[in-house]
Length: 188
Image 1 (cartoon, rainbow, N blue to C red):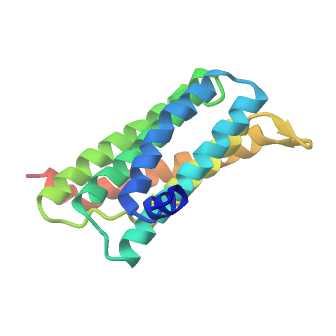
Image 2 (cartoon, one colour):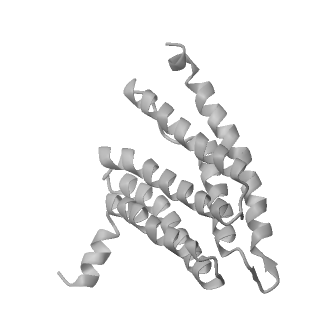
């Protein structure tokens, strides 16, 4: 099979897309280590591509009947790794307040633990609409914050900060919702 067909076949497999998302994280981290206009812009493009695979892998898995145990576990892990490492690099440069990143990353870890407890009892661990909004706002915040600099007099920082506040609100709201819905499990 020619290389371009192998690449096309690989990119239509949900688990491959999940692994791609994990594999791209070190590239983003290295690019963000150098806070110049070129590196941060490229990091933003890589993050954008990774964010697209987050949507695609779930869509392909459902449409083609390729839902797997690996995908159910690794897809949310890949998302948490991508978002958490991105926020850590943004804090490293002082582009995001550390307290905001702590709340966002802390919620991700707490909800992941809670989802494991829910899964153990056979409950539904799928993301709620609040979780989907949270993810959307996080992605919408990270991309312009990675771009960071002004382009054509448009402040990427201002746009990113606007979405960051939305991400923070939905992060807290969706986290509280998860724990509220699972309160019966926590009493045991």
